[in-house]
Image: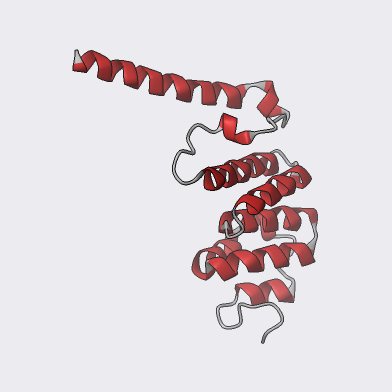
Length: 156
């Protein structure tokens, strides 16, 4: 009987992932229609406190919106994530990407600075090659920010 129970658990787990993949394929995701509570559609975010899970869910929602070209809605989701967890470095970085894609250099640099302050090695390296920053890559402030020697806006 334990083997049968194991099989049921596996089927249940596969079934829940099937619902996630089905949701991704539906028109609601295709057209960027997302639930008011993204935590209800992210069963894979299970570790951490409720606030941490909610922050990750909002961040994931923002990423999906950004990929759909809905940068303003993505920024709103990253703001929600940062309300739940102000030190969520990936939300700061993703928000910077959205602003860069919009051509808003000042806000892109401000948000990128926040991410780099929280995790200098990872986010400085990522920003060097991330195509989201192509529109601001030649800006001297961006270059100073990703330069290990200076790395802080306004210094140098």
